[in-house]
Every structure is written in C-alpha cells, then in structure tokens.
Length: 371
Ligand SMILES: Cc1cc2nc3c(=O)[nH]c(=O)nc-3n(C[C@H](O)[C@H](O)[C@H](O)COP(=O)(O)O)c2cc1C
Image (cartoon, rainbow, N blue to C red; front, side, top):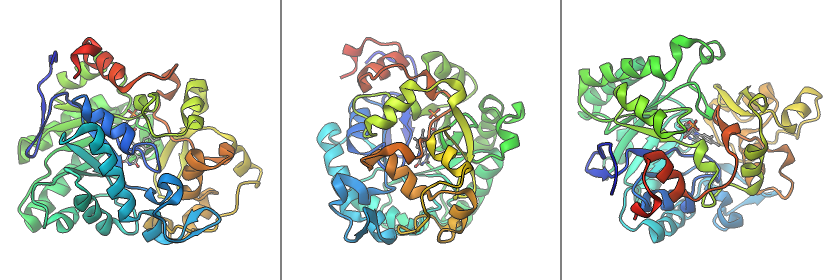
C-alpha cells in the first residue's frame, strides 16, 4: 500500500495507516463506520455509548417513551456484541477499538463487555481513567488508550498505572481544543493560543518520552494530509479524526446529522455547557434557542447516563439531558431538538464521500491502492 508514514503500532496491533477514526457517542460510530475504516487499513472505533438505541432498541430490555431505562438498558452488552460482530463482517480480523467515556455510570462493566465483544483496544476520555487496567486484567491483549488534553494528565495516568498495575498506556490520544464533543479545557483555554494542539503536542511527546515509547495520537481539527504531516513533524505517531468521517456514506449517523453539518457555516458552530461538566462543541441548533426561551424539552433522567450529571442535576443547570438530546439527533422521528456535536471544522463538510475516498485523500493515495 502506498503510504509515506510509518504504520501505527499499538500494543500487539499494527495499523497500516496512522489514522484513528475517533469514537462518536450515541449512534455515530458503530459497525458500519468503524468496520469500514478498519477494512481500509486505518483504525475504526466503535462507540459503546447508547447502544440501547441500536436497531430500534432491540436489546434495551426496558424503554419508557422510547428511552432506555437506567444504564444497563442504555448500554446493554448484547447490543455491543452485535455491533462488533457486524463490524467484523466488514473488516475481519483487522484491529477495532472501542470508545467508552469514563463518566459513564457503568464504566467498568462496559469495559468488560467491550473486551468480551472482541474489542482490541479500549479508548477512554471524559475523565482520567486511573483504574482502567483494573477492568481488563482478564484480557491482557487488549490495548489501553487514554485520551488526555495535557502533558500533566498523561503523567498522572502513567505514574498511577505504573504504581498500581505495573503497566503503561499502549498509546495516548491528545485531544486539542478544536475537537468535537466534550472538551477537556475551560472556555478561556479553548481560545488561548497556549492551548493549541500544536503547542500541547510537543509537551505531551516529551512527557511520553519520560515514560516509554508508546504512540502519541493527535486529535482535533485535523482535516487534510497537510494537517497530518504537520502533526507528524511535531512528533505525533498518528492522528485521530472524527468530524470528517461524519461526512461519509458509511457513517452510522442519521441523515439529519450529516445534512446539518453539510449545511452549517463557521458561525453556526459554538461552545456549549454540558451536563458532563465540561464544555462541548456543537451546532447552535434549535435546542439552544429553546433553552434561551425556557421552552426546552423536560428533563426526566430516564437513562441515568453519566455520573457527573448526578441524576439530572447537571442537566437542569445547563437546560438539557445529554442522553436524550444526543439520541434525538440520531433516532427521533423529529430531530429538531437534538444536540449536534461537531468539531470546529464541521462546516467544511460539503458532500458525502466514501470512507475509502476520505482515506485516499488523507494519505494522498489513489483509492484503488487501499485494499
Ligand atoms: C459528534 C461527535 C461525537 C463525539 N463523541 C465522542 C465520544 O463519545 N467519546 C469520545 O471520547 N470522543 C468523542 N468525540 C471526539 C472525537 O472522538 C475526536 O477525538 C475529536 O472530535 C477529533 O476532532 P475532529 O472531530 O475535529 O476530527 C466526538 C466528536 C464528535 C464530532
């Protein structure tokens, strides 16, 4: 395969193209997207969040008004298992990652479910996964990849994992402030040049060098081959890309989400407060106009998804339930009141493409070379 970059080595797995498709929660990165990305030599990531909604709630034992009740129905193991089985139909034995937010109420259980389902790697952000190795002890081949926003966070994780578990991460993802979804920065930091990905990356590479030689994967606003080359020049071993993959036919996201990004202009993308306790990046959609006029949907906390929200307390502070609003974007008959997460460059999506053609553009190869 034509590829000027070194393959990405994560634990015992070799990924021919040093490109990771970022996990996108509640229905955007499931079997079709992740399986296709892995099929063509990059690393596909299945999101374990909200799998109760998979195939019209087939595996959610209990639903109330279309919402899975409690974490065990929001994230049932059988759904994750079927998502992996279906992804494997596309990519065979190629490595597949599973993204699991640390903030999820049943985090440890979902990590074990993902290992059982055949995940080769666990990727975790939205909190420091200081006890992640605890849950994968029975699965020594599963690679562990924390997501951090600073060198400091990486050092804390390395020290704790060495002390408690005598192991290091198998790779680390550094998510910069142009990322989509939840951001590990304060609102002030997001626009502060000192926190640009280009500024943080060399610090994280230095921190990695203090501990070992596992890959550093840079994320947030990476859109072109030139962006990847810039990150590699700054010491990255690979990149993680999410928003660009929303603009693919294979992406599991709803047409509403894909079209909303295709229609979006730069000024439609904003920073919001999330019940998870971090800022997030999303479209300035009808939901936020309704919140301003006190006309947003009621907060019922049926799914009890993330710990920091404290059963709807965080949701009431910011005006919306994260599980309900993210799932509406993907699954509601009327997605008007959905929450549309996007990276800072979501407005650059102009049309749908195949995953293969996106990877061909990103690597500067002819699509026929990607087999
Ligand atoms: C719609 C959307 C949903 C996301 N959901 C998650 C998630 O569930 N877990 C996570 O760790 N990161 C999530 N992210 C972050 C991405 O995985 C990725 O690291 C980041 O968006 C990279 O920046 P880019 O979108 O500019 O490429 C999400 C991003 C988007 C755009």
